[in-house]
Length: 175
Picture 1 (spheres, rainbow, N blue to C red):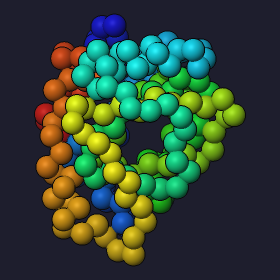
Picture 2: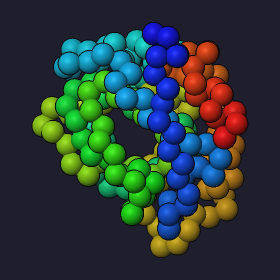
Picture 3: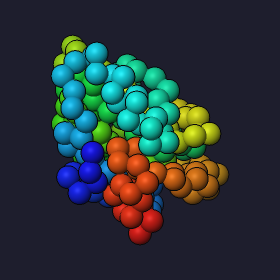
């Protein structure tokens, strides 16, 4: 794949209540990034992500409750089906996520599945050494310790779709 073929949609999200989102890094949404027409193509996503330094950690669905990961950046690739996702937390941005799409969520980005087709399956991957935690609803804004943890998450060395020369590198370096 050539990085010039698909530039991701850049989605900037500010804090929404208890969801911090990422103050400096945008969400990157790659439409039709990896060919897929069924669950048998999961290995294609896992291979592409792994080749580019984002080893896959799971296959499955996306939680139907708002959550974020304060200690890891996450890439999600849709292997089959489609879904509506809410990005940013309650009252955030609704996006349609379909087979072949890839979204990169910087640490702190709220997300949830609003609805999905019966065959909806994604592959989740993370940069080396990053093990995701699960942060759920709280009564107030995120604590300073959570914001500090998000700020300390290491910058990935490559774009999960295109590798070393992919758009993530430039888009995230310049915030």
